[in-house]
Image 1 (cartoon, one colour):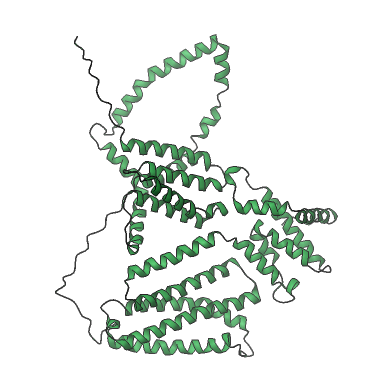
Image 2 (image 1 turned 180 degrees about the vertical axis):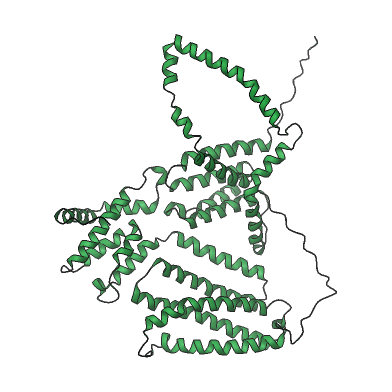
Length: 514
């Protein structure tokens, strides 16, 4: 038999093999860090690991400086997860990972106005990317899936496995060390890996991570290009023509002027309302409907000031639109003032905080519409600018402990402390979670001595909140700054004294569990 001394060159490692190995490593890391543990710093660490995996598995790995910049961007965007885990923080982190993936794959557009559409096209393909890659792999020559091949492959392993099991049992009988090693195997731990919830978690992580490692954009439908030689010009008397818009804007400005004048007199001027109506009722009835009015007005302005429409050629229509937008901005400010008046009477809640933030975003959106008209920008610019403002507000909000803020506000403005406003709603405060404990300590330190019933109720609420906080999942994976700050607050001498007082109070007079 003739042999040759020539060795074949080793085949280079394919980039897909690196991605598959990275995917398996990240799924295993997610199981180690996240599955079965409370969210905390583990989410931040896993996001950094995914970012590193994206950079290492890119077709053209970025330069060290660019890689460091992208990793720093991801860390900054995911910083809210260090403060406290939240849906907003997870959404910001996922958006940052999508950005890193698009930049690494050179799919990120250079124009800011094109970024929202690219993100939408990327998000649409994420759930299908792994299945698409598997189907392409199986469609390759020699990789076709068939049950006959699977059955034959399993059949080839039956005899080796049976014989190996027999040999192992014989060795265990002959060697006590092997017997001890076999008995020490925890088959319960192996069965835990077959937990359907765990497998589902692996699949979810694999789907999202694979889309990040192999980014691709959803195909856009081919839009027919309009014939520039033929243009439909709306008639002057059409529903959205010059005459109709002129009359609509004149009428809308007049109607809004009445509402604006009433707000200037009763809200901003502080004039006396009719005998049967309070400022709180006046504020409550108008806070939310006026925001809906502003949104409808914004939609009408976008239609009225479309490119090529009557607003582009009529200075009068443009002036009426500017005046109407100004009235809508004032309407949003009045809605925020209404909300403030209502809070003074009925205290602060999470829904009212969200309403205030939403009103601010609507006001910003109206100002951006005005800037779009003044600088003749496109609707893509308007969408991108609104997204930037929304992301900025969400990012800042992710660092704010709204439960603690609401509790401090309600305590400071409660009737027991400030001699004004509503009594402190301790039942609502208890529903906000352990973050309100420092505010409760402030309330107890300033509460007059003669209010024994309020003190006992506050001590009871504090006791159960501390108990719930102490029963939280522990471990380094679940650590976050917010819980660490609260833990340090509870270990302060004043808080320990308050806890002892709470225990003495419960010993003297037990309070039933609610």
